[in-house]
Image (tube, rainbow, N blue to C red; front, side, top):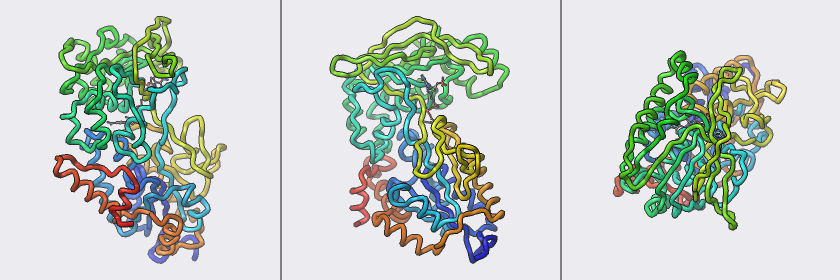
Length: 467
Ligand code: NAP
């Protein structure tokens, strides 16, 4: 086979995609736009189900965001796409295996862990990563056994991003507001008998630097049985932030600031739960009792200042306070995890790459290896951001095919590859299998007027598939 012939009908380009979240599916749709290129794509996913954070991260009461899976479904219907769920890179298949079957390998594994705060007390009982709670209420099979002590009245969430806002909203919603969502059954049961009364979100900078987005923060003021409050002093932004904001024309931040200022004028405390949003405070320690249970969080007040790079930063002004808390959620961002045999930038929590081409630590491009999504750029942006991100990488992959710079797989027989994968994981889940599971979940949801009732254990899924 001549190398230049790759991508033709006789010799289709074989691509392996590791990870089935939005980034992975946008790799598929971007490839499908290259109509002159003959390409087959095999997607590997360690979970039995596809869609990554759309299924296990997007909040269950945000179904409209989840409808993006219809677009992914369309891509998946293409004859040149195959899904292999329940197959783990580094366990069932290695880099060497993939090189024997594919011309190009792209990693779209996202950011599977969380950043730590770096303060004493993070490992006390009752101190959790917000992303664990998110995975738990979304029925992620690896998190079903997590325990969150919802008998506590006081909850503190550290961080001012959309994950913090999601966690606060789920904790503050009533059964009525949650029962028609696809929240995991066990989470709905646990939240129904929750004793949580006061939820406080902590931001280290001001409202003009918050990472949440306007629709998400607006919703905080629309909860059935929780009042939102912000203190007047913390809501009003400093002169430098105001000047920079006016000059930037950043509409979202302007909306955030206006919403927070509006909240600071609300003084109702009539509902059963109180949701407080704080600004200009940093945790210095999570404190606990003799048995190692969280009892509170120490904070220091901050002021913002303009640093030499033109960024608004926070610095402590020395005043301290301790907030009571029986549960603390750290919500300061996700972090990528290294993959076997792939160069990893520990400082940034991403795979070393240049515009999606994997490089070594010195920037030397590694033939045949690519990245897209959060493992390429870090955990930023909304779902749609991954579309343009994947396009950049796919364009480079196509360029490399045209230049003849790919792996040279020993076996590129389409069916032989499938047999090989099943030889490594007999319980691999295909897209047809997933379609059956999907239909069953949706059917189970109908009587309860829910979008679906999720399977949360692999064994249940295999039973349905009669494996
Ligand atoms: P994020 O947007 O990066 O927010 C992290 C927050 O943690 C920021 O407010 C940050 O403050 C704060 N933080 C970081 N280190 C801190 C420290 N040491 N002490 C105190 N605060 C600290 O992360 P995320 O909320 O995990 O969200 C991840 C991505 O998913 C984002 O792109 C987000 O928009 C997206 N997402 C979207 C939705 C949605 O659209 N509804 C829902 C969930 C997630 P600084 O800014 O001061 O660093």
